Image 1 (cartoon, rainbow, N blue to C red):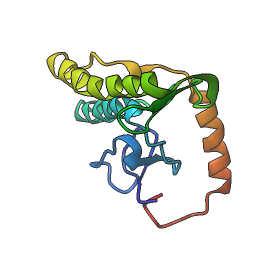
Image 2 (image 1 turned 30 degrees about the vertical axis):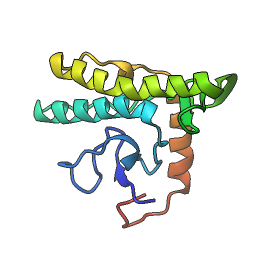
Image 3 (image 1 turned 180 degrees about the horizontal axis):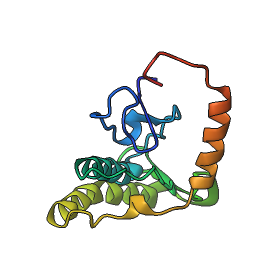
Image 4 (image 1 turned 120 degrees about the vertical axis):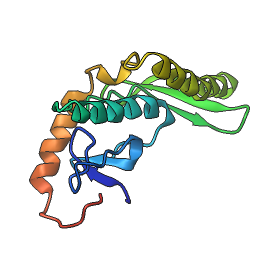
Length: 155
């Protein structure tokens, strides 16, 4: 799928000097879902990994909770689908024009988060919330049981 195979700290398994962010990573061979809503927390996790390594500390493992998915259907329609912390859709969603406006708010909020992080490094903490970890651990156990020894460094 063209993603960088990383460990659970988003560090490349082939070169510890390389850290992946967002859906370009495949921690433990399990690609992350593409989502702009999750890009900021995943970028923050990658930044924390780099800072930990520079300080000579062991970075924390990924604890990303996926709680929604936004989909634009043009400028006037969209869907904001809520999910539980394990990334399973729940009954609640917002659609049509309001869904498109929520998607727009999410997209406009990303530069605001980045600016806040630049002013106060470490202030963004959504990536540190624990939640969907149990499902990811189950997936990792299943994946490790099935994974053949591969020389390929991309997932």
